[in-house]
Length: 241
Length: 241
Image (cartoon, rainbow over all chains, first blue to last red; front, side, top):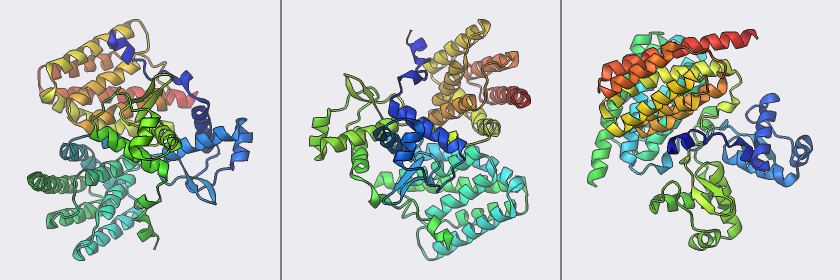
């Protein structure tokens, strides 16, 4: 009996508040007017006029869209389309997963499923400009490692650049979420440098440069194998502390 | 020059408003007290007291957590931990993708990367209870199809049940998002019934029942192949309309 109830819990669109409805209408405005990241929204008065609702409703709707990372408010300047393109800060609700060690291995398992395939698609689809960017990131990461400085943001950016060059928009949004989540779920700040990791980064890059799909696939797989071993070691250490 | 700026746009934690900080502290309360889905939150007065902020700040923080699907307000009853476990309604910001046909094929490409592997893990890890649930869903879907009634919610639930039985928490949250997004991005309400799709559902189920990983993998792959053909046909038709 509980089953039939479960099936319908996505159908309560009629119960939306005026604020929520107004949020959705603002999203429609953004899409229909083709407003881009960084564009400024009309002000409260204008929006209230355009959508025939009160200013307090507009304020409520804007707040909700800010917390969804669709809009951002710059004090004294106005409301703008957010750089975060509506991708939530913790889109998969991972904050609520208790066992962070298991979580990081689960995340890595997802990377194993996605990233080798993505690397082989990237080898076919990456443009010269995208490859140049990957190459720049690969160099920068190595420099930071040599100076013993944190490089994890760049690491996420390198993998994101590969993901985006696959031209699959879902993957382009998903990979940074997954890779950043791994760093948030375990403390990797003091990890020992693994030369294998750097070398396989470069192997992935070279295979994409050469437009060799199979090599890109295999290099990424190898990279993930080293990554998983590394993360397992970190977890072992942290569990024993 | 632009590059070094790009790298740091995740570091602006200090600029968080009191409302945002309070949201985060409420999330901490939920985690530390191990409050579960459906549990009732302390009321505004108690929360204001616990966190030493004003009631209007608590209200703002609660509103933000409602829009993040962490909390839900039931009128007259109070504030509760949401069934949606903090998974955003559109976590990947797909509302903003313009080409919905390409989006549905991109989403399907991700399913190809994930779901066959997941089916083979499910064949190893699914419990008897989970298999019973999958079996129930598979039967219900067939009944609905026979009656020519919409079954897509159940379809998402079937695939979610398989994903959750893999015990990978990320996959369990990700699969329903991806599968539901496909339905939102193309109009599949009038799709012709494909017997192949129903048959491969049952093949996936039987392989998981038999704990046969390879068969589960292959049946899911076949299921996705039929799905992609079906969706391509729908897209062709809708493009020509």
